[in-house]
Length: 299
Image (tube, rainbow, N blue to C red):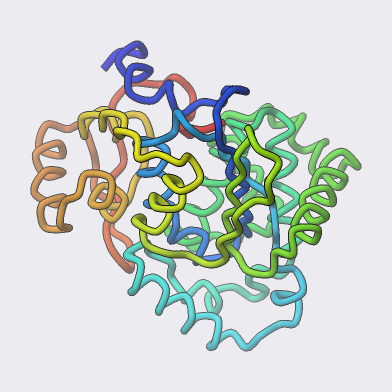
């Protein structure tokens, strides 16, 4: 599909100062619950992205991770979240490396360093970090791994290296953590909804819930139940996001996982996607030549 066709379905997701709502999403790159919310966020942006701007706030659980909880408890928690959510996260990562995820601060700092090159590429860098950790079991607190992710995200590598060790990234992360403290955010993920046309306090929603919960909150904040934007054809969706889980497709298109498998096999037979098996669930990688850099349906 052409760039024009992609924009036809995704342009409304991009930022605009006159959108009536702003959503602050507090995330930790190492948090499997944040990763499990990806299908919900995709569907919300595709259907109602014309009404809100999404702002990602780094809210790394530095204290909790730095307490060095027992590996087997962390691994067990990850496996339960993956089984419940359908978004694979492999707990074995805690046993397969000498010092797994030893510097949570570095992962959060890397996200802010990437975001200095633009909010859109920052979003894609975060997604690529999550894929590297939860699907490929890579240590995203290791600087060499972060540089690989930066290259995959088409960041300016020299600029990213410099920013990773700069006061600019540190200040950006400190700003995010100050926002989290001011809003009394203690759980990842947390979504806070603001109506930009009113000065009322935002509506804070800690934890992860089903799609219907967030849609209902969106309607409440808008004071209306608007008609959703048109969902793009499945092939267009895959081309745009490049790497997606069966769970994401199932939620966005209201399909069962069996129906997703059937549809994706057709695209695989046509050599438009490749199947990527994970410990929990399935992912699909686009083989198309569409390359309008990395997309995040964001801002």
